[in-house]
Amino acid sequence: GPAKTLPKTVVLVGLMGAGKSAIGRRLAARLHLPFVDADTEIEAAAGCTIAEIFARDGEAVFRSVERKIIARLLTEQPVHILATGGGAFMDPETRAMIRRHGLSVWLRAELDVLLARTARRTHRPLLNSGDPKEILQRLMTARYPVYAEADLTVISDERPPEATVEQVLDALE
Ligand code: S3P
Image (tube, rainbow, N blue to C red; front, side, top):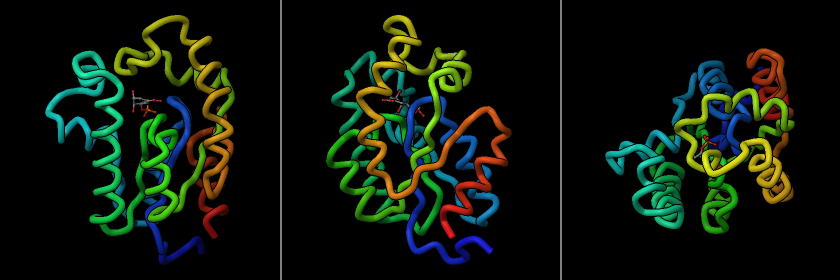
């Protein structure tokens, strides 16, 4: 069976709409591990939504909160499945933490999949400043070479999430 005793927290990285939360939840259930969503933890710690943090304090403040929360989860929580926000792995310090304490999995998705999955984009401040297709294309260009540094890459496409979960489980073996 797949990785019965995972030595490290599995950290899902990838763009908005890649399926980090949906895949992460199911992966956690399959492995009988807790699922943690870094964005949810940030909102709980800040007492407001991510959109509000971006609007009120700006992205730099958001990144520093994100850095602290992810560091805390990776060092203080038992092994779990951790979905991170799309920009987390782009932050050099956060990335170093993830590389050191976690097993990173890039959920790689193509533009049409990302666009379809982010159609309701009210809570995603980065997609609200212009044409979402152009923004996602720009983010793919900037981020995919860095996401490629993850320990494992799994393609996330239009198939049901269970199929992608199987591929992650295979990759973890
Ligand atoms: C961000 C992605 C979001 C959230 C924030 C910034 C990014 O998370 O952390 O809006 O920089 O890509 P999701 O990838 O879960 O949407």
